[in-house]
Image (cartoon, rainbow, N blue to C red; front, side, top):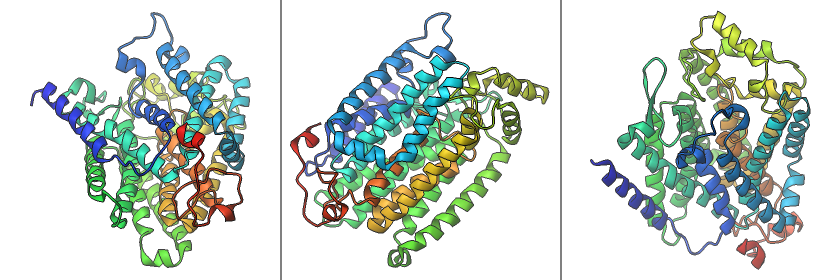
Length: 479
């Protein structure tokens, strides 16, 4: 088929999916488009790439970044801050109730002080704040469930079909090669592992929505919603195979099994059994990733390196960390002189062009290199707190709780062999989304009967869990 005709069919198909998925019975905030656009870029390639804008001559991209990308993220962050200020009470309650996340971001800011490039580290911290701001935009929406569903759908409807289009008809955009000549599918991203990551995250959310539609037999216009979500899920499953990313495939399977396990009568009768299911799945996932990591990995970030294993990288990175307690500073290890020790050790071991490496291929080790043991403990606190809140959310609302469990468990497993806790990383954003959303449901700031967050988030939980449909204030539904 001619690529132009394929592009036209793809564009019409995307428009058709948006049309099939429309739901006039639920009203979400227009501000929800901010995190949607944010994830369109985070889940694909930089704005400067899509606009064809190259960095100025002589610019150090690693240190200076792209002015176009900086402007884009700055505008989105400014708009998000305005919205969150207008939702002041909800924003305040969510921030204070998720104090481990606040402590982590505060420590990241403090660590800028001992970074080798404080100005660069501070700019990266500002961008990292954007991750949290977009999550708060989603969770402070009065219609939490509808906001989550529309987020997964709107992001997926654009990125997944376009990835298939690029792979099939635009090889210069959707396909690439590893240094040893092996072909890989990249879709809208710049490497196969990034493609696998965004696909598995969106596919988990789509599966959750699809299962909910199967249960809701009385829902109006259910058939066309099922069709739209079924098509999106089919795209996701196809792309997981095309991406050939073992990490993403394992995480999706485990997350899907977890959500399906929540439907079992034995778990419904005794919700506490979900913890045993999670423990077994996480153990199985870690073991699978440990064995898969030794069989061969090719993770492209910037220039590619033909890496056949991770243990050597981990050993070299640990040896090069300047301070085991506080690390090299927020997102600063790979731009510090310490990284030269890693490259020299890898070159002596016979690695091909080690300078193309700019991550530790382990989320926990990545945090250790940048923030030391203090950072690792704070990440552990976020994971443990998120897990506990997902458990409480599961007791209140098993359908929502299973989704939160899936994302928290996926983040813990994914980060064993990939850097999952970095800023502007889809895995990190979805982890924050799961933890913050779980805190809303766990604390009772969610009406299980109406599937909404009442307009007065400061009201006592008992009042918010009644069966009366809360009246949303005009300002919150309009923002």
